[in-house]
Image 1 (cartoon, rainbow, N blue to C red):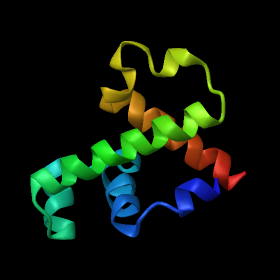
Image 2: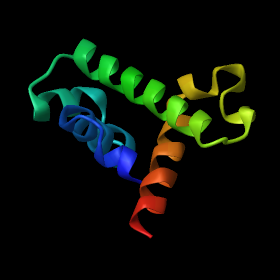
Image 3: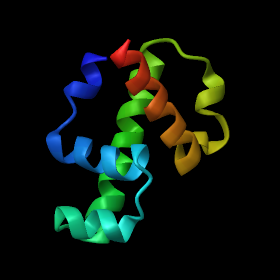
Image 4: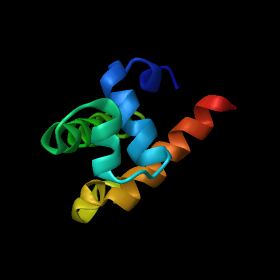
Length: 88
């Protein structure tokens, strides 16, 4: 998806290390030389970005119900799915 490529580089770095590779937050922070607050902020922004992306693409509302996008496991799974679709 072009939308993932359009994400700011610092978001993609956090998304790759934290969401795709599953590295611990502290490790991500050390690798990128950022604070934990900055890391959490970027994950939050990625979450909002993905939510808007999925809504605009008419994905079922169940992906947004009950704060599922706040669940890192759900966010990680969705991000991995979108990345795999982009690679096809």
